[in-house]
Length: 187
Image 1 (cartoon, one colour):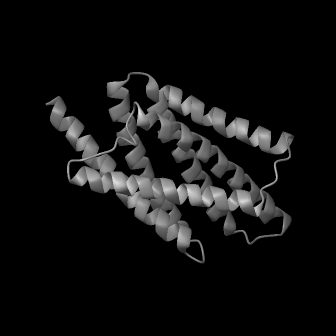
Image 2 (cartoon, rainbow, N blue to C red; image 1 turned 45 degrees about the vertical axis):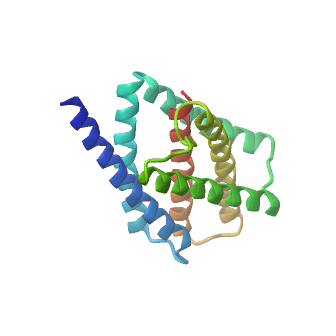
């Protein structure tokens, strides 16, 4: 039945998302980047995004295409603004973005735990308060991309080891997924 299929897809999305989250935390706090962990993260994230996209596309036909196009536009627009406006990333900006990311992760975990007990605030839904957090998440995703572009530029400027390209790829993947999922909710 359609309900059991959606349930299965939801379980796949949950498995992929939780696995990707665990690997993202491991990758984020490792001293030396592991290409194998970055690839495993990307695979699990792909499983989660595929399942989430399927659920959204069934509920809101065409929304996935809009979110994909919007994600590419956000990437291109942010890169253009970064280069043309010569955006400089300072320590205050970096600290603000990192704190905001951890704040969003904390809110997500709180909402998850509340959901396990049958209660939710609606921070990550598709209407009301969920729209406010989706717009804030989208803006935060763009800020994360700015930090990613700065990381790449600084790595090139100071001759970072080639393995750091895996760190940059991981960070940009996280930022683009963050933007995409928030665009799905907004659209």
